[in-house]
Amino acid sequence: MDFERPKSGGEPMLPGGFRAAVARELLAHDLTPKAWHAAGVDCVTAAGESRYLGLANLYRRAKSAGREEWPAMVRHFLGVLATSTSAENAPPDSLDAVRGRVRVRLGVPFALAEPANPWQRLLAGTPLAVNLVIDSDEYMTYVTQGMVEASGESADDWLAVGIANLRDATPDDWLGTFHEETGMLGGHAGDSYDAARALVLEEIGEPSPAGWLVAIPARDWLFALPVTRASLPGLPLLKVLTQKSYAEDAYPICDEVFWVRGGVWERLPVTLTDERADVSPSDAFLAALEELNAIEEGDLGEVGGEA
Image (cartoon, rainbow, N blue to C red; front, side):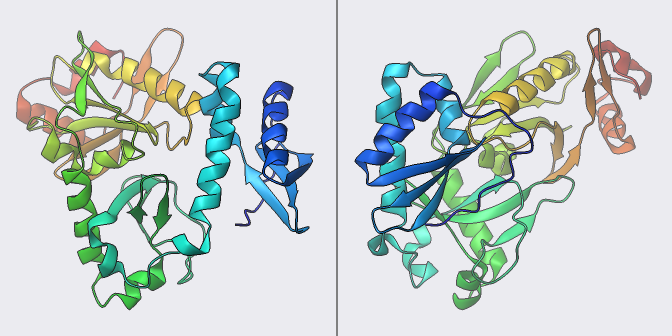
C-alpha cells in the first residue's frame, strides 16, 4: 500500500537507534530504506516499487518499551502491514457479510470525500469525526462511502450497527477509577477502541444528570469525570493528563476536554498556566450545574476557573 509522505514541518528526525532497528527489519523483508523523514521512511521493494512507511505511532510505542523489544515490535508492524494489504484480505464485497465486525471509530476527519475514501460523519461540537471500520484480529479496514452506498442500507443504520457492536465488545470492567480523590475514571482496554467508547459512555457509565467531562487524547485512552460538585476540582488534572497523553501516546487524537450530555458534545475550554486552570464554560454548562444545585455560576473559582 502506498502512503503519502507528510511534510516534516521542522520536526526532529527519528532517533538513530530506532532507525537502525527499523532498517534491519526492512532489509529482512526485502525493503531497502532510501530516505528518512521526521515521521517515516522512503523505501524500495525488491521489485523496485517505492513505498513510504509512517513510523510515528510505532516510535511512540517503542519509547515506552526496552530497546531489546524493538526488533519484535518492528517485525510485528511490518507483518500487520503485509497482512492488511494482501489481496486475500481485501475489503468485502458486501457490508452485510461482515455485519458483526462493523464498529465505530472516533478520530481526526479525513480531508477527502470520494466513494473510495473512508465514510465519516463530523461529530457536532468537536473537531472530530466518526468512522465505520471492519474489525479483524490484527488490523481494521475503513468502511468506504462507496461500500455504504452499495449496501442498500442507510449510513444511520450502519452507524447504529457499529455502535451496538462496540458496546457489546466492551469489557464489563473497562471503565475503572483512575484517580480516587477526584473520582476520575479511565478506559484503557488497549484494543484500539478506547477513544471510540466515548460514544457509548453514557450507556456504560453510571447515570450522571449533568453529564460527563470527557477527553480522548489518543486511540487507546479515555478519561472521564461525571459532572458533580465533588468532581469539578479534578478538571485541571483531567486537562494535564489529556495533554500528556496526546503528546506522548501512539495514535494521538485530541487534547481538548468535552462536556457530553444526552449525546450532545460541547468543547469545554480549559487553559493551564503555572498557577491555575482557566475555564470558560458555556451558559448551557452553567445551567446544568444550577439544575444539579451543585455549584453556582460564581463558584467556578473552586477549580481556579473564570467564567
